[in-house]
Image 1 (cartoon, helix red, strand yellow):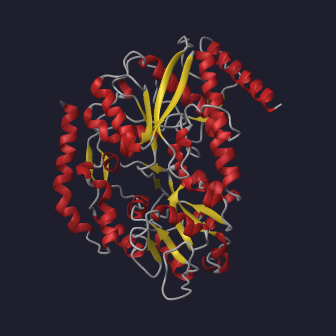
Image 2 (tube, helix red, strand yellow; image 1 turned 120 degrees about the vertical axis):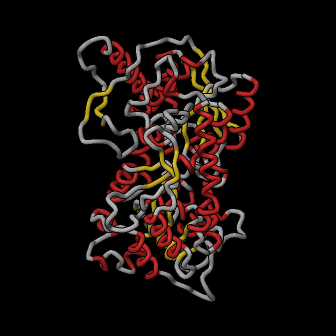
Image 3 (cartoon, rainbow, N blue to C red; image 1 turned 45 degrees about the vertical axis):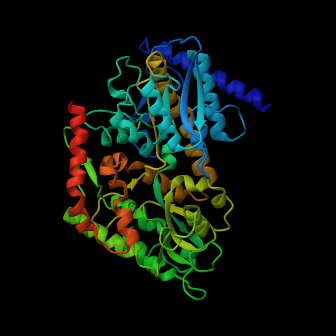
Amino acid sequence: MKNIYRILCLLVLLCMAVTTFAACKGDETPAGTSSVTEEGNQPGEGGNETSEVVFPLEKVDFGGVTIKSLSYATEGSFQYQTFEIAPQALNTEPVNDTAYDRAQLIKQEYGINLVQELVPTKNDVVDTVREMVTTGLDSYQFVVAPLHYLAKLVADDAYYDISTIENGYIDLSKPYWDQKINKQLSVMGHNFFVNGDAIVSDDEATWAVFFNKDIAADHKLAEAYGVASLYDIVENGDWTVDVMYEMAKKVVNDNGDGMSWSASSDDVWGISAQAYDGYTFTVAGGHTMTALDEDGIPYITVGTEGNIDAYAKIHNILNDKTVCSLAEVEGKSSSNKYEEIVQIFANGGALFTPEKIGTVSNPVMRNANIRYGLLPMPKIDKSQEDYTSTITVWWCSAMAIPTSNVENLEATCYAMEALAFYGMEMLTPEYYDRTLKNKRFEDQESEDMLDLIFRNRTYDVGIVLNFANDMLGFYDAILISGNNTHVSDLDSKRDAYQEAIDDFADMFLE
């Protein structure tokens, strides 16, 4: 019965697609269009005005051509990247099955057979693409991998500038492409990486703060601020790192001979974090390490007075060993320290844990015996206008087209546009509305927080491209050391950063 229902649903979608293409040549708005924002493409993001959006391309039958995507095998609980393009079969997992239906629609309607293949690790993706572009072997037509790893090959001329491919099949101005990545990583007008509704693993890599509702309730943390819940503090615009710190100090509980960094301990930390959070909290305070000027050339933004003051506050909080545990410090002897951060929180060992959204899919979290909620990254102070979150470049996926793809370039671009459009129609609603919101969180407030978190997401070009092979670890090293050498470290490294940026810009000018 389920198979009959699925077939009927797929037939309806096919009919909608045919109607859409027919309407592209006429004046009437077809049935089955979507009301989406012109600005938005990420879940929870967008402007106030809506307009009807239809698939923009003239129907083309590519005659059964096979287009292969390259990704990497499962690591931990972060699994969507293994099947988000073209699952091998239905398996009753809703996101998997929706991605399968989308791939089947594209195959039947446009004659494009999507195949998703995996190599063991992220570094294997890099090695495979490097070999392809060096030898000219067109083994895979596009790549889906985290930004940090994709970026390693930009200087090797490994990817097409998607915004200038002449066939016109990919339109990055459409709302199903992430406009933030298009703008914030468009170095000198070049767009090598794209994401949006075509995939969901980029959403999974967005940073937020998990909090233990039971600990918050037991200590009446919200009541101390005259509100009913921590969500009200966010809604009032008062969620800051200072508020977070004050709450964290109130809940610390040492049940023995000093605080223990162990999932089996009964100790309770105020904040359980990792060194990368020195960066994530700084970006949440409105301070990236780099930005793009009006010509798209990167420039250094770290080191301003506001940035120095903001990081000093963050460093003091995350290095308060009576309140905050850092995986790289307290858990430095553990080979699974990042997994143990999640286990500590799931066991009730911390009030706050900053982590990627995808943590909710971790079996440890899904089986946790605690009540937890989700908050945006806090402001640096109340004067900050908006909450903002960043992504982890180690996990945030994007799509890229290797320059070895020549013969199948048109079909690849057409397939990617179809993946994005039907991702907006099919995949994003299943992932965001039905799986992430309805199945992973028990309260409406956390769902509202998701909308807020995704609405203002920041990409930092310097972190993605890791200038001087050092910028990505700049804050990590300072935090792990325990000493706030922010200013002196930047003074010693600024010339190297600038030289790397200049060399990168010169590469494009040449």
